[in-house]
Image (cartoon, rainbow, N blue to C red; front, side, top):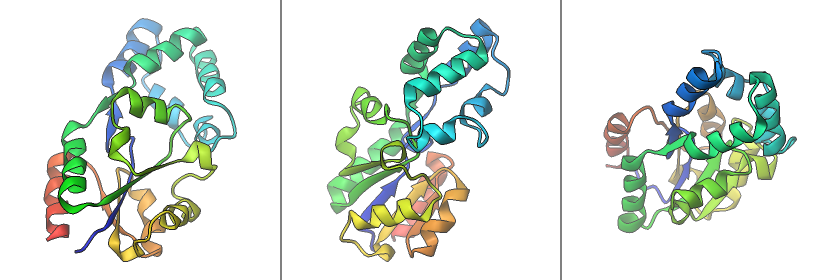
Length: 198
C-alpha cells in the first residue's frame, strides 16, 4: 500500500500514561481506584476540556476539588509524571519520515498543554502539523476532525493512514476512505503495519 500521509494519535500511541501518576494519586492522596475514569470518562469534565469549552486550568481545578487535592499540587504532579514516551513508536515515525518522506499530521484529543508537552519531550519535529481537539473545537470520533485533517494534506484519503489506540475512533475515518490501524502495543503494531505497507 502506498501511504503518503500519517494521521497519528498522540495519547496512547506516541505518549502513554505514566503509571506512577495514578499510583501517587492513590498512595499519597487517597484517590479511588477509578481515578483514571474520573479524569477521562465520557461523563466527566474531560469532554469539555478536550473541545476547548473549559480551560485546562479549570479542568485541573475541577479534578483537584473532586479528589480533595490542592489545585497547585495536582497541576504540578500532572506536569511531572503524567506521560512517558513510547520510544519504539517515535523511532518508527522518524524512520518513516526519513526513508519514505511521509507527511505526519497529529490528530489528537488533547488539552491546550499538548504542544508544551511535545516540546518538553523534544517531539515537535515529529509532526508537520498538529490538530489539537482543544484548539479546533472538534474531537474524535467526530467526522469533522478527519475532514479537517484531510484539508491539510494534498494526499487523497486512500493514501492516508490513521493510527489510533481506540477502536471507536476508526469508523468515521474509514467512512471518508482513510486507511486505519489500531495501536495496541508496538510489537503488534510493527507486525500489522509491516503487512500493510508491503
